[in-house]
Image (cartoon, rainbow, N blue to C red; front, side, top):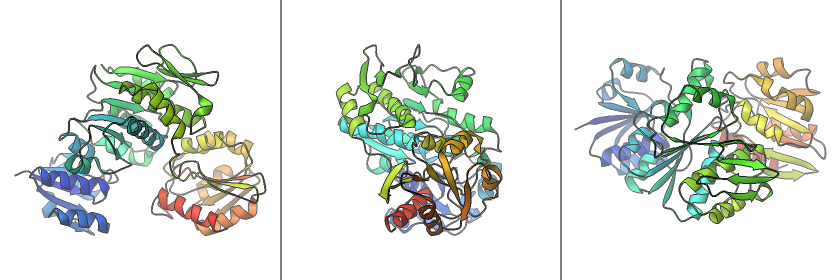
Length: 444
């Protein structure tokens, strides 16, 4: 009997354990931290052994294979020991892919992944497809394969998930963009991060599709060194030769099979340049799956924006409050600032991942009247932004931050939480950060 050990007891780990148990394996799950009650209940219902608060070495290093949760770095001591012993280490997505023949629509990029994934899923649901949502959003792919299989899955993939994928294949692969992010996990080498993102093309053949942003210089350069048999379908904000989707004079055109269809950009439910790219990528994905044009148009027009991504909270005394807590890297904040038209009180800060803030400096100088630094250590923010805007101040909690923003903002301003950084210094997650922000703003 094959022995499978799962490291990490969150959504992906618990799902992988259930699938392994269903496949008749000897399964053990171990988590250095605490496992949430709902996952303990799931494991207990299936009779799966687990531990929390530490790793028992003799119960892990006898594994035939290990499924590692994406948040665990390869440098973690137990992972390093397993690698030294030659134990294969894979991701939950890799593991789940072995036990399904479903079509896989996989989406990655430094920014826009969640919105594009949710939008693509929305279109396919509206079209009546039997579709599941997995990866960084929705339920574990492995758990769905085990207990609620679908014919198609739309999967948001981070670079961490792509790292440990080997035989898995995306039938439709989407690469939205690549900008510096998570470099602390890639030896602070951009080329390592880029290589991780391009693993989404791995194993693609002539029947598969690769959708990408034509104008991304990093993607364009990397493609010069890659041979693939997949059908290439680029998109661009401008009409370009060979593009599958583009915009011209306020009209989005999508041309997958030689019969183009169009939609005015003003009718898209989610506005802004970044969402235009997301809409084109989702539209191409749906067209590849033979979804009718009118269904795609209708779904693009009634889609509800993703929580914590440029989410409108309220207007109070003429001040708009926007929750963009999901902006955990500099480029994501660039897109947020690009869409701002009023003077901005900007909330930055958190766990820095090797950020270069020069990318947003022009927008900060042009649009930002004050910065509130929300983090345990704000020295890097002060070193870069002091003197470039009238006010740069600090807050040690979300309550203090919202109060300072309330005092700084005037009618006609926008308070924008778009931190550029991960949340783990003061908050459990970017969701926790955004939820606290919204709650406090609504209490003003």
